[in-house]
Length: 318
Image 1: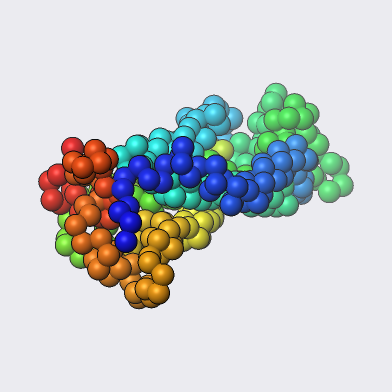
Image 2: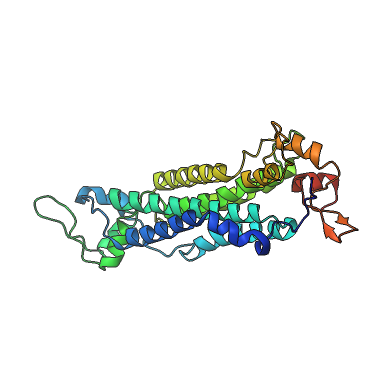
């Protein structure tokens, strides 16, 4: 069998081919971006807000602790930087491409679902009174007692988008996906009982949770909005991750399906793939170490077949 070496599947050698294979997926991402823009432009449903309902909607109108522009940095850019760092170490374009594609799908699908629900529900935010009546003087219909807002239309429009929380859903979509990704790479569920791995796994979830809490503290959302947003983001992130990667508790959970398929395709003619790709690796790549040692004859490092978690435990990852 030909030797599989580190650097054999890089952006330079396989990037264009892989992008062409998944061209339709990238086109769907563009479509999701367009839908997301449209959902933010259209007017949400203006739910009836009676005079007697204002008691729970008179919280102060204040700035965001986590500004809108910071959410993409936390939910998209940060996971991408970590994924790119792992690619720099492994040189596996399959992992890089599928991880980023899954991340973008998780965030954009979550964004579309979140904003579609926001527009359809039209739930007023906890600070709706001050959005509707910035001067503090309530004006209501004499018959229905519905609000007759006197404030800025853009601010009022945003006031009808409380459910679910977009900050929360985006954060849990991106950082939840990152938690899945890290769990697979360091083999959190290898039954060896390393608690440090769990700490690393829970760190992005903690950041997402703090973003969610800030939305309630800022009176931009009710607790139900935050709970629903977190559940939505984490659910979509899980589905998108499992579309490209085995579950982290799986024997092959450290790599994407495409990587193991590439190994299977590289088998000699007539050799049947084994039931587990790890068994295949043991039989066909007995002396190949995952991305650590150099081949002195070719001066090129071998393609990795061990997880980062293995190397952490072995004390060879620097």
